[in-house]
Length: 377
Image (tube, rainbow, N blue to C red; front, side, top):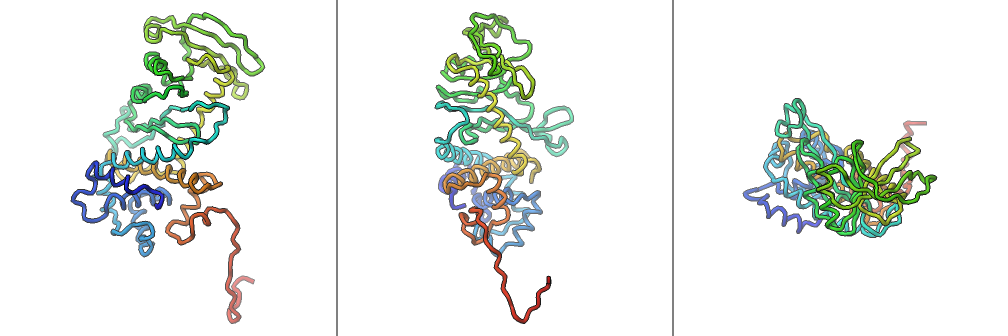
């Protein structure tokens, strides 16, 4: 909690009057309790209450001064504006982005590479009717733009499950010279042309019914898996009006999966092998979604209202970012998974955090008493 920028956090609280007429259990303590729940893998409000009561004499180490009951925490999740924690997460994103700016990519590229995708979190229709997705199902989506240099999410937007992925392109502010890697769900030529006009590059896959007219074919080395590298023009009426300029079409054969992939991009300078490697790097955002679903509490929720669900998701994201910042600022070698595992069993201990995460073997000290017989011979 020492690395949390609390003054910036108070700015977010004051922006939405989170502590207005609150006499105890302020937003800062609310965030600490939610971070505790994430780091120790608590499953419910009762679970959080019982664990905090068991270590009540040590809560001051984490800055928790008010008594934490299930009712207090439930009321805070329902009434504290979730935008407080969403805005604070954006502050942490900017901080993490600066720390990971000099990390190297698997590809030898100077440009910034982003992966854009979404993950769906299923909800019960009877408990979460506000997140209606289908006739008998509720869900929410977390649309994420992740910087592949350090795997830091730079843009997150949470919507109901029925919001199509392609609409998120309208919310992005394209960075000139950056690459945006997307799957076929984002294939909208009007929106892609807007990216092109902003001088940003995109790499996506073509659908099976994609129609075009070939203008030129470049020579390729088929031993690399690239089968063709073409300059094409769209021929279908509306797509041709929405994207009136040439596109680059690359057909690649993935020997590992034994599958042919067709890529579309507006970059004509990079080798076709690099374009294929860029799209392959997009799978890092899939691994990110899998990681946060396994190691953060965003599949079982502590409340059923929209405010409670979004509060829990944003505090989970903030916790992930704090661990990522901790890893970089202290130059820790263990992975984020290892750090989370160590923190889950060492919270509220007096052991210095660098010592706890050093992974050095510490011999177990046993006190020998001459009058005490050994229980285990």
